[in-house]
Each structure stands twice: as C-alpha cells, then as structure tokens.
Length: 179
Image (cartoon, rainbow, N blue to C red; front, side, top):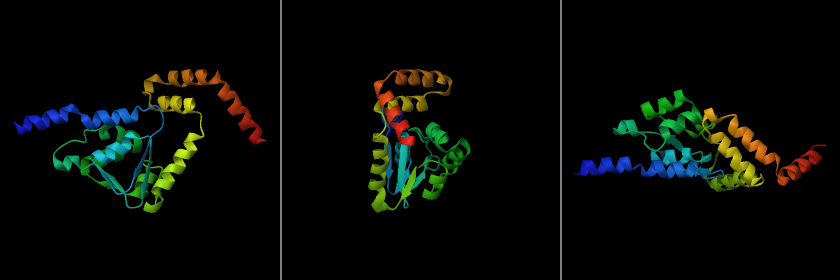
C-alpha cells in the first residue's frame, strides 16, 4: 500500500504545480541560491525568471541516478535555459553545474561571494523596479508565451503600451537624457 501512496503523491504534482504558479506570477521573480541546488531545489530556481548564486553553489538533477525523473519542471525548463544538449547531459548523467559554468551557460545572472548574495539580488531587483510595472508584466508575458503566439503577443503588448501616458513621459525623459 505504501507504493500506491507514493505513486499518488507523485501524480499529485505538488512541486510542479507550485513551481508553475511561481513562473506565472505577473512580475519578475528571482532566486538567490547559496549552496547546492539539486533536484527540486534546482527546479525551484529554474521556475524563477532570474537567478543569482554564490561561488559555493552548484546545480544538478540527480534523479535518474535515484531511479526517478526530474518531475517538477527541469525536463522542459532547463533545456530552455541552457540548451537541450547541456540539459540532457545534466539529466542523463547527474552532472553538477558549477557556478562559473552556470554563469557561462546563462543559467544564472551573477555569481557572487556568499556575503554579497542578498546585496547582489536586491541590486538586481532594484534595477527592475525602475521599469514600468505594466511594461514589465507584458514583457514577461511575451517572453514566456509559446513561440506560436509570437509576434501577436509582442504586437498586442506594444499597442497597449503605446497608448499609455506613462510611456510618453518615460520616453520623453529618456530622449532628453540622451542628448
């Protein structure tokens, strides 16, 4: 009976559902990773829009070595983040991605010493908060939309933004600063 309960727990997809909800949040999300991010912990980081890690972090999907699959999003999120070949290598072999590789492959946006992690994460978030909230939201929708939805999502978002007074104010201020 224990095996049936375990199977039912897996089919409930609790982590997968939670991580999908994180990905669908309307504004950018950021994972600050300090130390190992393996299995579900790595998949949680993949569900965020941006990732900053420390120089003592690493990412991995050891599931196949444990006789299971990465069932909370790595199979489809990781290839989009680092490319199909690298993702397959990580998932097929259980290979761990060290911080320098994670940065080079585009999995993380920055690698910092542990005592600078939260400062670096907050600095990146501070840069994001300067942007127009509605433009951020629409940019996230456009980036996350299926390829078949483009260029329609892009054009619709642009049309909505071009009507906003905030766009006029921001563009005018930008053009004044460029001169």
